[in-house]
Image (tube, rainbow, N blue to C red; front, side, top):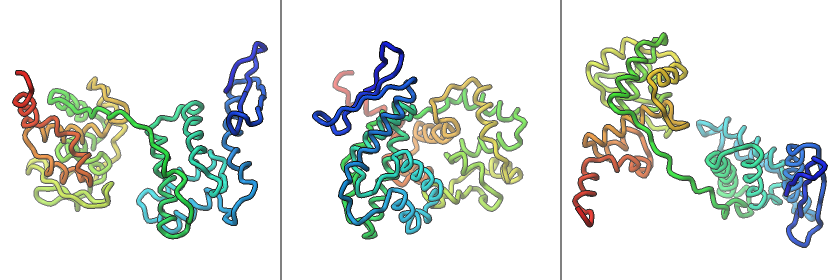
Length: 322
């Protein structure tokens, strides 16, 4: 624990190995220094416990490099994921892999939240990435021990509300996009709203992605191409405007000018949510929507099911009182 002393200094008071172990007290001029020292001592515990290490002397960064060389480089985000993994390993003080325990990562998560203000969703991603390294090396017989993170539960997150725009908000937004100095903003926004595309997919189309009267998205998140029909009018207008220039920053400003408030992290994704929500509200079916959005798991698409007119009618019909 960390507490402020009457002198104004900050004291770290910990027992590295729990009750009954040697008590360590040390004071610092600032609370930040005290937190850094606490993190240092808790994360070093694994190293000190490995007084009789096994022959496998690889450290976390060695496993990460081995994972990247054998598998990670094949992933679309392989290079960026390796960098994230290396950063995690360094924050964990890069322990020997055989000394790395679930309690170390549990402590790491707590300190990341308390000291760095990192959110639970980010920490769940870090947990997934690091656990995947051990799982892949186990599959390749390059790691003969259990996955140390196997039994650590991830944080349970509240399901975030998926914001979508009303027809009035759509009209206001398109007017602001049309008035923007960015030549592509209006067209990219319409394409995203008309097809449920991710912003990067809509922004990245070229003339070759269009055929009468549909657009095909390649290099998608799932790695699978998908084609979505569009109106003849929209096709003829967009085919004359591609390729588009980057316009996500201009979209943010258009949202602000249209006085639309969105949940954190749902800026450009609101076009995708809006398409899906209106599709279901107007009677579209979930399986078709799944194909349009390119969801590999129907559970993702089912988030929009409650908007279905049939769903709402069943609530009224089957409720215990009317």
